[in-house]
Each structure stands twice: as C-alpha cells, then as structure tokens.
Amino acid sequence: MNIDFDKMNGLVPAIIQDNTTFKVLMLGYMNKEAYDKTLETGKVTFFSRTKNRLWTKGEESGNFLNVVSIKEDCDQDTLLIMADPVGPVCHTGTDTCWGEKNEINDIMFLKHLQDFIDKRHQEMPEGSYTTSLFQSGINRMAQKVGEEAVEMIIEATNGSDDRMVYEGSDMIYHLIVLLTSKGYRIEDLVRELKERHSDTWKKH
Image 1 (tube, rainbow, N blue to C red):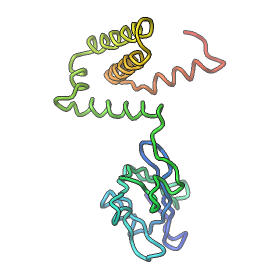
Image 2 (image 1 turned 90 degrees about the vertical axis):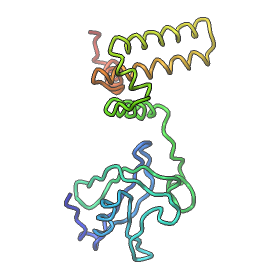
Image 3 (image 1 turned 135 degrees about the vertical axis):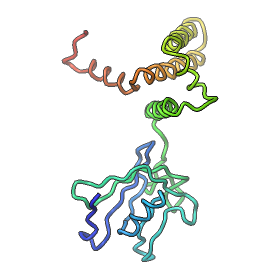
C-alpha cells in the first residue's frame, strides 16, 4: 500500500470494523510509525493526539484489536481495518464508540458457520466431527442431510416445535458440510434464491 500520510500532516484516519459482525467499532488516527507497529504486532496501534505518542488499543485494559486485514481507500488517505476485538472497544465500557451492542446478526451466523466449516475442510483436525464427515465421503454426507430432513419432518408433523428447530439446525449444518465438500458455500444457495426472487426469473 502507498498511504498518503502527508495529506493531513502525517496522520490518516483508521476506521475499525469487526471482522465477524461488521459493526463499525471506532475511529482513530495513525501516523507511519503507528501503521508500521500495527503491521508488526498484529494489534491496532494509533497515534494519540492528546498524549502525543503511539497508543496500542488495549495496552492498559487488555481489550486489544487483533488485525485481520487492512485496506486503503481510493484516495490512499483513509484506512479500513477489519479486526477481532478482545472485549469492549470504547473507554466507557461499551462495545463500540457509538454505544452499540456488538452482536452478530442471527442470519449472519450462517456465514460464520460456513467459514468455520471451510477451515475444518482445509485443516482436517483429528477428533473433529466435521472432519469425520468429510472423511466419510460424499454419499454419507448426502445421506446425513436426508436423515436430518426426515427427522425435522417427523418433529414438524408429530413432535414438538422445539425439536423441529433442533433437527432443522442439524439439517442446515450437514447441508453446509455437503456444499463445502462439493466446492460451494451457503451463499451460493442465497444467490440462487435472490435470482428466483427477481421479476425476470424463470424456472429451469
């Protein structure tokens, strides 16, 4: 990156966004030294204009911001940093500097689960149930989706709503595993549903 630190007297604004929830957590400023330290340590470091020194977020509270990625904007004078926060971000004790709760949206958890299953597929750790599913082969994975779907239907027609939700969750989990094994993600199903929702869609 070629960041223009000279445009604002050696400082650039750095927007911090949660990598999981996508909530904007805070805004700080970095000089070249703070930026370099952020890259070196993997923890967001700002230049404090009030203290006139470098300041690593969490150096006193332990509520660090662990860097996931850094992007510059089109004018090369603003940074967008995706981070995993450790605890509340604001000095007042709130999750964000705007007093918002930093909670993952329920539907967005599907992406988080997909990312987790992707990682399992890449690393294949021993002792993991997800790993054992990948190792069992495509036929067994497809069978598990069918089994869970049947169990959900049974609960929907002759069981309890709580158990229906439980079995439906099992079905979605095993469906994501199956999709992953075929090189797809849950977002591919979402794109298909979005296409079907358009006025121009025609059934294949």
